[in-house]
Every structure is written in C-alpha cells, then in structure tokens.
Image 1 (cartoon, rainbow, N blue to C red):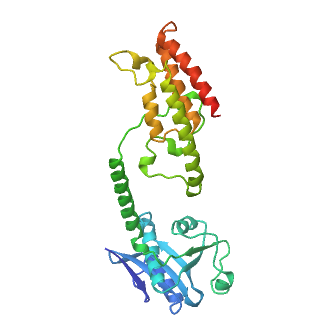
Image 2 (tube, rainbow, N blue to C red):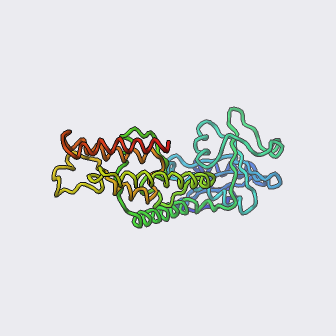
Image 3 (cartoon, rainbow, N blue to C red):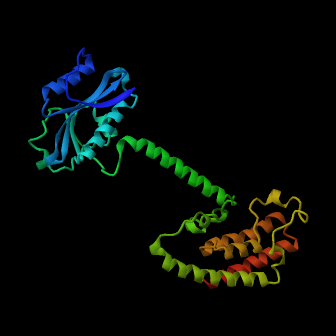
Length: 317
C-alpha cells in the first residue's frame, strides 16, 4: 500500500532513502518540509521543499526515489501530490536547481529552463548551486494534478466515442478524385466529396466573399452544362454507360463520367472552380475516344462536343 505523508519527525532504522528524509528534516526542521512516499511501511522516496508564501514560490531542495523503485511513476505521483498541496495553500510556483541527471525528470513534471518569475521574487531566497540548472514550474489552480492522468484518459475515451458515433452517422465511401489526372493542381477543401457532411466550414472571414463568387460560378457552369446537354451530338453522354450495352466498358474505363453525374455534382456544390468542372467534362469525351474506334459515331460525337464545350468555357474566361 502506497501512502503520502508530510514528515516532520525523524525516522529510525534508516536506509538510504530514510537517511535522505532524516537529513532533510533535521537539517531544516523549522523551515523545510518533506513529502515522503511510503510503501509497505518503508519510505521509498521523498521531496524536501521550502515554501515562501509571501513570494508565491517554493524551492524544491531534494527529490529522490529509491533506485529499485524508479521508472514506476512514483516520482510523478510525488510531484502531483506536492502540486495539489501547494494549490491548496495558494503557492503557484516551483523553483529548483537540477543537475544534468535530473533535468529530464523535471521537464516531464512541467518544469522549464525559462524562468518567468521575476528575479526580485526569488533572488536572495533560494540557495544557488554551482553547476546546476535553475528550473521553473507554474501551477494551474484549476487542475487537480493527482487526478490529471485519469481525467485525460477519460477525455480520450469520450472523444473516441464521439468520433465513432459521428463516423457511424455519416459512414459513406466516396469515389476518389480524378481531376488531378487532368492537370488540376489544387482544389478547395470544401469541394472534396464528403467534407461538408463532416460539418467542416471555411474560415469565417472568407465566407462572405466566397459565397458570392461561388454563386456566380454556379450560374456560369449551369448555363454551360445546359448548352452542352442541349447540343444535338450530346446524346451518347447523357447518362452513365450501362453494362448491358457495353459489358466490358468498365474494364477499360476506370474513371467513368457522364453529364447526369456532372449535373448532380453541380447541384451538390462540388464544382468550386472552372478547372474542376472542365476536368470532368473533358473526361467524358476522353473516355469515349478511349473505348470507341475512330470511325464510330460515338467517337465523332466526342470530338464535336469537346470543341463545342471548349468554345463555351472560353466565353466565361
């Protein structure tokens, strides 16, 4: 059983750690206090400290854990209890001189080599040690340090459950983007299928201008798409190719596209740039030429529609 006590009297039958406690208690019985870690009725670690309430800091004089009990988290437990004790007493700063072997431990406990406490607050109070590094730790009065690990663990579990719940609600697999194969270098985040469903929103400052631009773009693209669909040679591209009509079509065409799919994407706000819109449209004609022979009506329709589309897209810049 592990217990934490403030020790103010000597310990008999002293071992190494007991000697440490005896030394620190007897050395400065009236000025210093020692927090001891007791396991199975024997002390295995401790922290000797001196409080300066008027200066709002405490000097940590010694900190030690028995060698055969290290790397078990006892040092952190000691420090957490010490932090809670000081918060209860309204002292929110720790200072200590750490040797090269202790710097790593103190960093893990929230200490830093950057001293933000005013030098006038501690100069002349804390004893300086040659060859050691002065380190500072600021306590947060809103944190209960002895419960900190369990709180973080519980928060992680809650976040994990919330993420899982959200994933279950919007679980949907979208096809990969193909626009980059057509030379598009980048696209806005909100144009990626599925992003809107996650609740992501563009930065507040950009929304006003962006909404106006996207509304104008949507009108332009809708007009072009309507003109393309109304063209006499657009009939082969109005909807997705059915397997019953071309059984091996999807063996050759890995990224199919058609005017109906583009219409649906336009309604959903997928096309955030003209390049993205053009990439899908040109893929429609490219797929047609890939699958059909040059002497077919389909091939000629693809060439005719591509020229027509390019002329229309140039009209809007």
